[in-house]
Image (cartoon, rainbow, N blue to C red; front, side, top):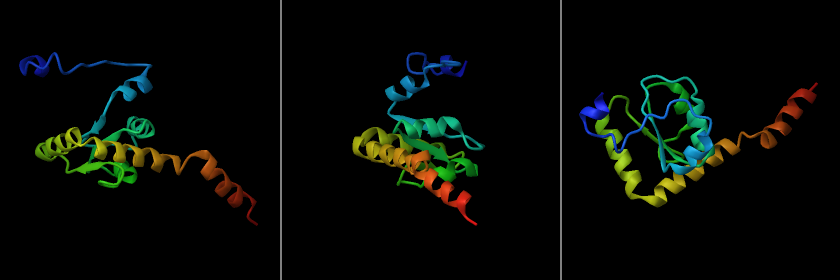
Length: 128
């Protein structure tokens, strides 16, 4: 109803359950998660793995375990609509910033990928 009231029907779509998330993320430029509460959202991890610049709120610890402000994403104060708008405007205007944040997000996940973690676990499990 709010989309219709604000006449945003041509710009906002609710897609419902999808099985082609990777394709949808590949078409995006930014992933925004302005939640009031999150655990560890899979959607955030999927966006980071895709190399998207991400914007998260500081409302809960889950996303903050992954995102370091302006290194591999953008953190905004919870409930601060002006800060969210400013972050989106800056990311929309700066392709280089979007690309560097997205690459850093992907790299931070790859640092914990199995090929990097397996030798650590092997060492722990072999320890006396």
